[in-house]
Image (cartoon, rainbow, N blue to C red; front, top):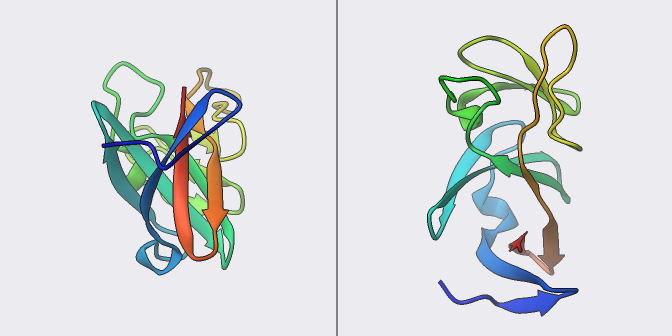
Length: 112
């Protein structure tokens, strides 16, 4: 997949129209070898995280329940920030996040 644009050494890839992403649910997109879970919280607020939770079994984060600005791991129910990817206490860990860029209704996700 060829990058649609490069900004500050981050390559942005078109992943669809904003209407392709349902509200408060995760959707999986693939960029090269990386599987990304994209969450849409409102008309123009989207977050992208690696589709792998921070524990050994690495469950599919896109299947998690969204509440506010958090997603809950579908396997262990740990709470993960959509903003930072940080796993909330009492659990620990970090999930990789990706920047989102909106160009009209087109959604782009950035990767270094």
